[in-house]
Every structure is written in structure tokens, then in C-alpha cells.
Length: 156
Image 1 (cartoon, rainbow, N blue to C red):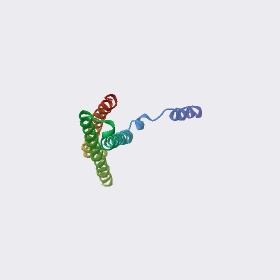
Image 2 (image 1 turned 90 degrees about the vertical axis):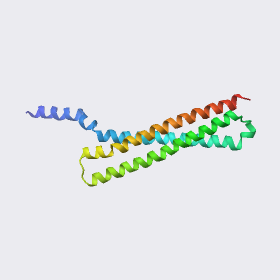
Image 3 (image 1 turned 90 degrees about the horizontal axis):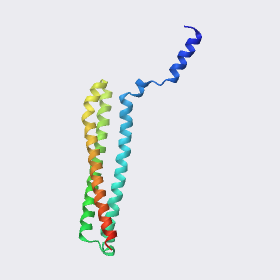
Image 4 (image 1 turned 60 degrees about the vertical axis):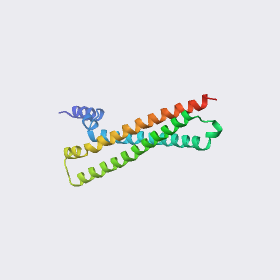
């Protein structure tokens, strides 16, 4: 190979990304874990805010706003759904930590990639189940609270 061909060959390697490494499962799993954490934290914050606002409304402003029975029931149900969402968040976080701990143990034992993947698959499936439950419960709680807020606002 001539020197000119070697330069062109090395330039070609620099210009083209290594797609095999880019599509490596480990990197996608890491990115997926980060996005799951961000999304679940957003849902946690939103559920917490709705709980706080709704409880404040029920305890301190119920007389001033003349909250009727239907809106009170809907707010209480919304708070309960959002509390359940927070419980799912807590369980999901504990499950993720257990997954990381088990994976670290398997790596310390120098297990193969396939062994680690099979052993931790159950934790991953549980984590996603808890995340979906958190999202569903938060959505239901939000809808109930919004309906209750609408009743309170428009009943005057």
C-alpha cells in the first residue's frame, strides 16, 4: 500500500464512527437507566406537589371555598392515587439499587456478560413494572385532582 493510500485509509477510519460499539447493549442500558431515573423523579415531584396542594386545599381552605362532597371525595381519591404512585417510586428505587448491587457482585465474581444479563433480567422487568405503575397511578391521581379543582372553580 502506498503512503497516499494509507493516509486515505486512516482518514476513512476517523471519519466513520464505530457503529458496533455505538450499538453496544451496555451503553443503551446505561442511557435507558438514566432516562428512567429522570422520568421517575419528575413523576415523583409532580405527585408530591399535587398531594401537598390538595391536602392544603382540603385542610385549610375547605370552608372558604365551600368544597362540596364530590370534589372532596375526588381530591381524597387523587391524593390516595398519588400516594400510591410515590410508594411505587420507592419500591422501584429499592429494586434498582438491588439490581446494581447484584450486578456488581456478579462482575466481582468475573461472570460472563450473558450470565449477568440473565441474572439481572428479573430486576429490570420489575423496575419497569413499578415505573409503569407509578406513571399510571400518578396519571389517575392527576385526572381526579383536576376534575375536583374544576368542580371547585366552576361551582361558584
